[in-house]
Image (tube, rainbow, N blue to C red; front, top):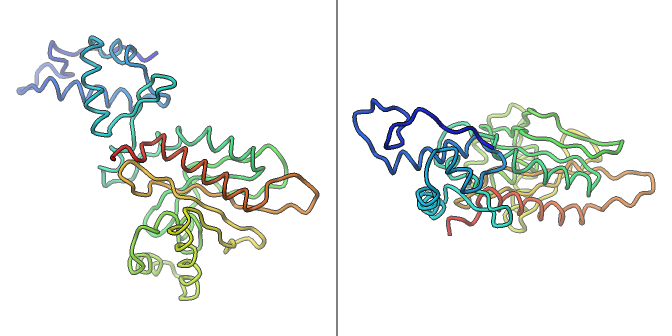
Length: 269
């Protein structure tokens, strides 16, 4: 249960000394700021209690915020949470807390189901940045370190993160890497085409022999790519019932779609 927000004046303003007052705007911002601190979301009554507002006031504000795509309602739990709309409006380094909170449980389930490591990445200049990583419980895994930065041209994650760009833009970004070659770009562009045409891509690891990276894009509120979900797929030589790489693609697509839905993909429509 969130703590009640205190020290607000009769119009709901956090600062009672403001020269100008916009009560409706203040209420909307109060809701956004409150939900920004709640990784699991809050029910309508919990929001009203925390903000010292009536449920009818909060309902009207939530209806507007939901219609504008800033919040979304999980009908199963009746909890409201932020979409990635605020993330997409900002042109700064992306706030990753909400994204990783949403993706965490889905990534854990995916890692266990596939018996493969899974990581989540965003674009950081001409590199990918790994912001979440989960390993399966078994042995003999290949994983990418949390916080790792890798040139986008060498990754399937980079292909998923950049397939909405023009080829010229990708080439310009990739050229910033000192190890960039035209051959590397040609391989990368083939992976980009897979992502654009099928929603999933596969490419041999440029770093570890025998590993095939499988990635899917995570789509945000306005249809833009917000992140990529990747499995560095390893085929174990011992006899096992692990899913093959084709099954891995199917499972990863489902996981990517679920994360995209939870961060508000399609809400703009």
